[in-house]
Length: 253
Image 1 (cartoon, one colour):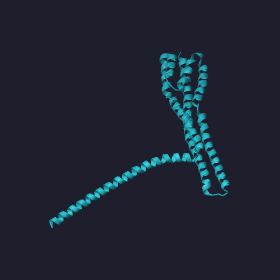
Image 2 (cartoon, rainbow, N blue to C red):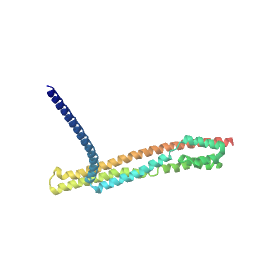
Image 3 (cartoon, helix red, strand yellow):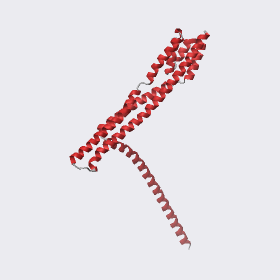
Image 4 (cartoon, rainbow, N blue to C red):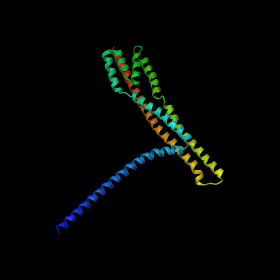
């Protein structure tokens, strides 16, 4: 009887060990399948994009891709420039006011000279003509403000060009793809899905690609425009405050 109980316990232990091994093997197999699926998904995304590029006819897709690369180059350059041009105008005004009270116009000019940004440049030009009177300073600030605004907007026209050009290139591929489809119908003398599918696919892929490029560049363009408007508003407010400071300083003299 005791031997039967021991034998049953050994069989139960062996069955438990076998079940545990099966669970571990199953878990490992599931993990491997998940990893392989994730790798395949990443690979398939890249291969799908490459395949669609080829299906869209590289002769047209290359132009759309060039428009995207050049448009992004101009957009990134503007974003970096505008972020560097953004400065703390309140801090600059406080420093200029303190310099005027302690060291006069030359000290204020030194503060502007060591501060980056279009606002500091405008301040410097105005302070440099302080001896000619407040009216001259005001005209100088307005004139140089226009120059700085032009520098801020430099390059936006190129981004706008590629925004308009990318869909046009896509539509050109659409038209040529449809022409190819109708040519195939004319040669075969019959309408069948297999004849026109290739031309229609080229048409749709090039159109979508052009629209996607335009959407991406439009986002950058709108960001740049909003940033420029913000900087120009700060320039105008700071210029008025500078004139008030100079009037007070002139009255103290």
